[in-house]
Structures are given as structure tokens and as C-alpha cells.
Length: 471
Image 1 (cartoon, rainbow, N blue to C red):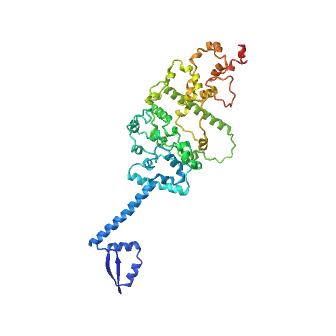
Image 2: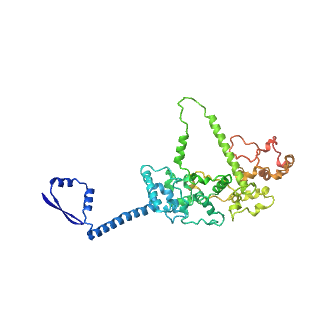
Image 3: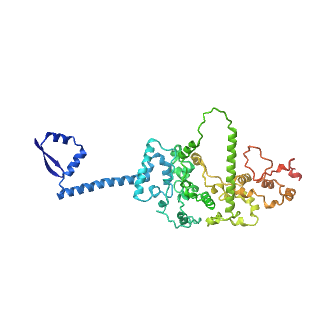
């Protein structure tokens, strides 16, 4: 029997213990329950106690919410992203881009507190990957793709002309149709590094501030004309490709590899020996057919762009439809230009290639080698070279779109065959012929680019040619 006094910050309250067993039980009570009992025992009628509770609650809120806000601000900063080595390419390209004055989360998290907290919870998996095994390549997924909401925080959808003043693009019409901004502007910050394959594990250390400036090529920062052409062409065929989120984001290499593994046939268990040659031949045939279809499609689009192939379309494919400053040069509109531009092509091929190059007409971006990119030197000044022109004529889809057709100057076959000798007397004249024709039939497996025509000189001149001096 005895009296025990408990002292608390809330004041004194006397308890009389009448049984030793009771005191023993109180010693076995957990700390949380003890706190709860003390809380219940507070005299809330006392205004001092109520003010103390308010003060403690205020301090607690400041600690909890202030600390939480501090953590959010820290994780929202670009330097926090850069603290993980696997993000070095993304951070380096970000600092070298025109968006380096805004934080990463302004693009990668939708506006709103709920979206912010949700994203932070989902991002815990990134910490897991960092600790257990960094992915071979960082690729933005369909779920995490930059939304139009993010872009419209800074940019107006009412823009009709690009900043350069050249392109006429109805941004509002595209957005209201549901086209994601990143369908065209995927490379504005990170220069499409994932699609180019230059942010993989083995080359992350190459992404220094100096190298980032070299790797941030203008053609990858700006919208790719091939994307516009591909999308418009699909719309003309009744398809809206942007409805598939995968159309706007680069493929995840891990998912692609997983899909390939799943599509592999299971082994049958039978020990049979089958030659692989027929299968290889079939594969080569399929690749050749695919390439032929691609070439034909590219040439059809090019002919539409230069106005040589008219058809009823929803979206015009002609250059003037979108371009204000870039138009067909006046020299190209001179009568007979189609058949007389060879000399210009030889002397100014580098200028011709500013517009007439396949890469501008294709949406697909080839994989690149970052080491080779960094070692590349400045392109030397072009010097007139007929051999180079001939090669471009044969491999460039823009050139071959027209060079595969019989020139108007060749006339009817029976007349041209007996009258073309005077057009091929000198070596220079013959060189012009050899742009499209070969002297002899190319051997199988040759690396020489295929000629636009199968007609070659020795098909008729089987005994060869007379010496120019004897003509």
C-alpha cells in the first residue's frame, strides 16, 4: 500500500495504488498505451492544457509538412536526378538544351499536388532499380510520357508559325485532334538519345558537358520532317497513328527483347538436322521485298512533295503546304530543268543535299555509335565529283524517283538507238550517260550501287567501242 505521484508536462495528477498487482500490470503496459492513458488523463477543461496542445500540434505540423516539402523540393531538383550515374546522359543533355532553366518535374510530372505525390510514390521503384540493378538503357515509357498539359504550362497552343518563321503548323488543330506534343517534339531536350541508342550503360561516362554539346545535333532537337510525312500519309489512308501511345515514345529495349524471346518457337525435342540455307534465302527474300516496298513508298511521297503525283488527299504532301520560306528554287522552274540539271548537281551537290536527302524523308532514326560520333571531324568542303554524284543518283530515293523514268530527250526507242552516238562521243558525255547506265552488266555480289535502269552499253555493243580518235 502506498501513494505514487506522476508528473507530466500537463500538470500533476495523484493516483493511489491499492494493489501491488495493479502496479505490476502498469509496468507491463507498452509505451504507446502509456502515452494514450496520459493523454486521456489530461484535464482539458484547463485552458492552459488546451494552449499547450495547440502549440505542440503546430510544431508537429511544421516539422512534418516542412520536412516533407523539403524532401519534395530536393527530389524535384535536376541535381538530385544527376546524383544517380545512370542519369548522366539525361542530365548532361538537359543542361545543354534550351529547357535548362526549368526543372525536370515541370515536364515529367503532370501539374497538381495529387499527380506530384502519386509520381513520387511510383518513383520508389527507381530507387529499387538503383540499388538492385540499373537498366541497360533509360527509356521513357508510355505511362510516363510527357503530356500536353506539361507543355501548355509554358507554350501557347495558338501558335500557327514556328519560331523560325518557316513552318506553318496549326498547333491548336493538332492538340484538339489529340496529337501529343512529343510526337513531333520528342528530341527538344534529350536529342532522341534513346532512339539513337547512345545512352546505354557502357557509354554513360562519355556524357560530359563538352561532349553533350557535340551530341546535341540540331536535326535531333527539331521535329523530324519524316515524322510529319509519315503521320500525314497515314491520315490520308484513314489511320490516326497517334492514338497508339507507342507511336510517340521510343521502344523499350527490354520489352522488345522480351517480346522476341516470347515469340521464339519452343524446341520440339526431336533430333533432326535441317539445312539453314533455305531459311536464310527466304529471309533475304523477305528483306528485299520489304526494302522494295519501302523504296517505292518513299518515291511516291517524294513525287507528291514536288507536285508530280496528284491525288485526292486529306492533307497535302506538297512542300508549300507547310513551308513558308523553303520553296522550290527559281532555277528549278526553268523549262527543261528536269533534263538539264546534271551540271548543277555535279558542281553544287552539297547544296542539293540540304533538301534532297533520304534522312529527311524517313521517320525511323538509325542506331548510332557514340564513339564514332565524338571522333567525327568537320565535313570537308565539297569538290565537284561525278563519281559521287552518280552514286547519290543511284542510292538516293529523291534522285531515283525521277531517274528511274525514261528521259524525254531519249525519244522513241528505234529513233534513239540509231541516233544517240553523237550524244556519247567524248569521255565527259559518256560519264553523263553512266550516271544511269553501266558500261557492262554488274557482276553478282558487287558493291557498286544498282543503276536506275537495267540497260547497259555492252548489251548491244558486244564487241566494244571504237577509239574516240578514230571516230
